[in-house]
Length: 348
Image 1 (cartoon, rainbow, N blue to C red):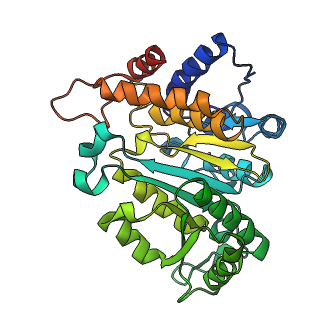
Image 2 (spheres, rainbow, N blue to C red; image 1 turned 180 degrees about the vertical axis):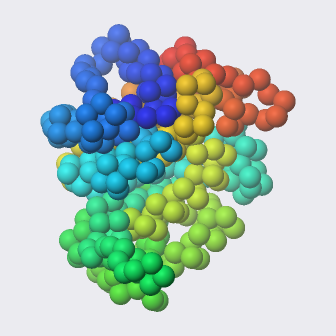
């Protein structure tokens, strides 16, 4: 599902990578589907029934990006962003994994000092199906001058428990450190979040569990990001913190993500948006889309060696000095979207 804006351009580069793997024997079948603004333009809905049915029947979804200013005036239920929310809800993609890694070659691309971010390797796990994005009641009511906007932070115990287990299992695969993010000092929903984290912790005696209030976590990500290994957060806080963490790496255009169900089926997408201001100009960085394909091979298809092959090719490409405009220094030659994709393919 390439979607809108730069989505089709960067998806083209990710499919070049998959084509290499197919030629080398990877048995994977792909089908295209309309989504987001492109789907609204074609059939009047951002998530058509045919697209949703295909997503439900597939083993994985490789997703580009959706949205654009031309859709901002649409009724909320027809806006492109409703497609990604609908896919998460209908396919129960409840666990969002967002790595924030700093490639050595890009340590000086961050707005922070290189010594602060060099070697950074964080995994942020965000719950996707609960919280204020889906809670009821929600409304805008009242006369002009006295209007009231309402959204509800809502979490069930079952929702919290399953994302906590993902957090603990992920920490166990890394460095056995899990930091749970909440705002329990003022929010009852977050008090429940912390209580359940503490209740689950004895099931993972090898994992060190810590807690941090979200405002402090936002500050600590800038002050000393390497203190974290795995962070687990609710939908709202995880959304904000993962975007903050992305800028530690130098560019939001570098970071992939995975949204998984309970069985390992996933939706894989770069965390950047549709970037309509550069769409169609060959300026977009395709690496996050390519790395999203690598995550797909790792988490859904259980092919870690194949995923490593892609990731190693990306590292080699960066080591050779290729840079798209978002990660290039002022005096560096800027590679186009297709040039960056072709270089990754060559390094495979």
